[in-house]
Image (cartoon, rainbow, N blue to C red; front, side, top):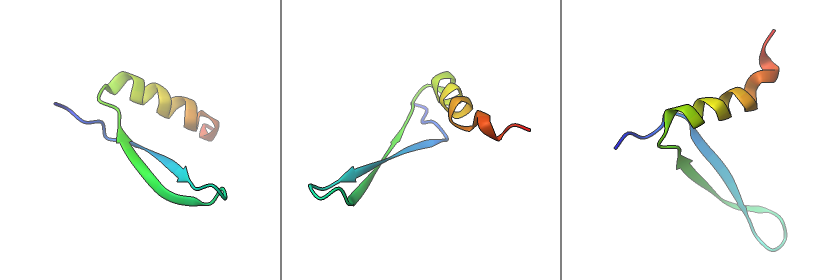
Length: 46
């Protein structure tokens, strides 16, 4: 099994809307991971 190198952090919020925890997940497939990375950070290109 090959885990991805870029984790996805997802906040978990309580009833009052405050963050109570963070879940960390890893994409197992490299291509969707790189597509997500490009989508999320494409605004940083010069």
